[in-house]
Length: 161
Ligand SMILES: [Zn+2]
Image (cartoon, rainbow, N blue to C red; front, side, top):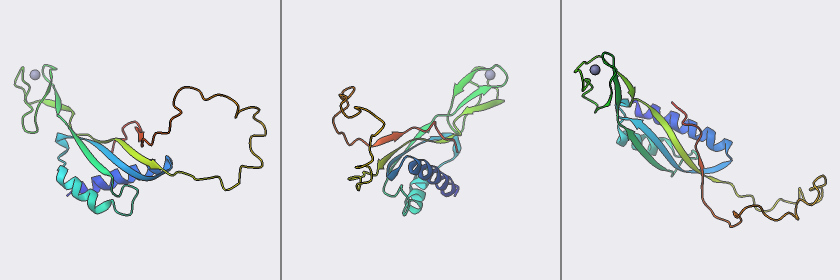
């Protein structure tokens, strides 16, 4: 069952980028999986349930999107989509075709919960803002002043596995 090793590397990658972003928890993981990757979604779910406990991803919502396979004909150059079992060229019937999409597996995005620091434990109260004149008197720029608790979305450039 290669889903276990796939999910393990997904979780490793997610863990690394979530920690870099200062996350305390991963709330959602979105994967894109080509239909030709021979990945059974149920098995991925199962692997996730088995491997995610004790990681930041524990309890995260896992969603998977499949990609329809696409091939290019080596004879006439036609590009076409197809299912897992039929990849003959629709315009010249050649079976000499090359898969150009549909075998990939990558992490689309993850959502994280960041740690909220309550109070600064007095570390910055005395020595603060000595070199920055009037930085506290500036009016807030833009209109993003309301406090919304939206989880951050990391889109780290589709880390291919
Ligand atoms: Zn063709």
